[in-house]
Length: 169
Image (cartoon, rainbow, N blue to C red; front, side, top):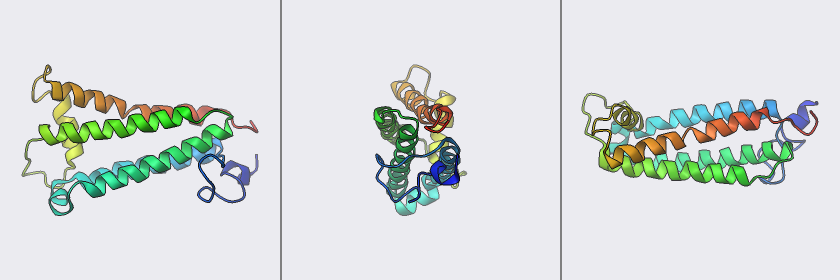
């Protein structure tokens, strides 16, 4: 397979519509790994010291951009594998709903943390959910754990999409 076909054609990755381009398995895998690293780095925007200065909006904006790029990459990969893109839309919707649910749970759940001003509140929330700090039967804990589980769906889908054979395989 030639390098040009692998990265989405002669026009590159970002200059075509989501429905129009393709992305081979190798280019897709590298792209989603970088995307997930940016997603992890974006968690720093939930650090209390940053939230106190700029609120939650930058974190939510970054999440929206990352989900859009996630969809673009997966749509192109699915097109390359001659598959429909509805599953990528559905997974993106699940991701959006999980983030919204976690933000809502976090608004009611989080305890103030003074010693850990740089520890992202998103990670503190997950730690509190897993430790059942409010009890295992608390509805907020259950909803938060469901949202955390839903956040595992996009990476699992990415692995599946990366393993699909391309058109030229």
